[in-house]
Length: 389
Image (cartoon, rainbow, N blue to C red; front, side, top):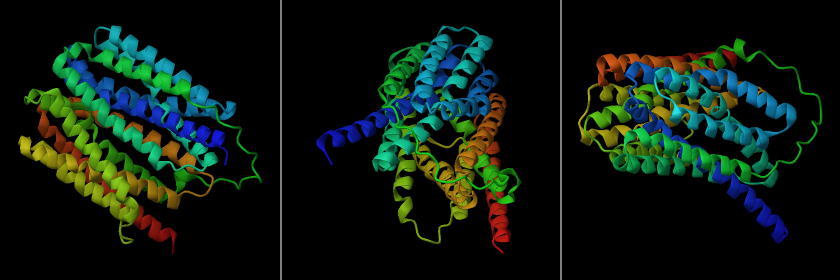
């Protein structure tokens, strides 16, 4: 291997790591603190829920459209660049908007531009890293680390600047995303298929796949209250921005540890068991949050993110890998993304109504969603046993 090729291979991975870092810095700023900015702009809990639900609902249209353009034109990098530029323009429009209706319209434009970026980045990464013989995990970890950095930056900023100015920190993060997208290397043309693929089975007629999709959607949707309103609730309880960022970072760290150790889990920890563990973790976590726990309990509850999110996500991905026939992985992931987006949108809108009416006790609805998700995981287990007979 020549030195020039080694440098080129390192350059691809480094640039891709930069893209993941930029995506997750933006997420680390927006996910905990965009609701704080919306509240500072005068939106009530119901309006905040509607605004936050927009990207989860519009991804149903945006992801297939962007992915189709990227596939037809073999232009993953180009579509990522365009989507990043539109996201930057959209957030500038959000920052200049006044009133709930104008903000909702501008943020809906952001949702259409931004939601395809992560699935496109994953496709770009898997194709480019495979061609270069590089592992996915060490590159993807920079995203999780950057999320923590982004949340801390926003937390520190919240202690220094008025909440009404947080949107410009989000705009700055978008500018980093545009830069990272432009720095990506073009991908080589994909090889021609060696043979005609076999006809595809209807995934949406597979009871096991439907049950897994429902379970994953409910378990991830149970985080809607946390994603949308935890920063507002903790801020109202007297926690400063740095403390809120630290609590969010603790949850992400717990998730990272679980993924890092996932290859060492005992063989008897099946994918269904992971989803059931995630459901149990969500039940405990959200049930405790509904009781408005004391501050000393919050770090321990945040560690349960490794279960409520991490174990649920890991179990769902492992189950889909087992259920879905060869050649239908992308289709299955698309169906899952749409189902999860719809579930999260509904749960976020409901969370806005419940949080506005009841405050923290509204987390009880999220606990019920975890129970329902665990039940669907049990249905998936039974459906798989029937299919294997």
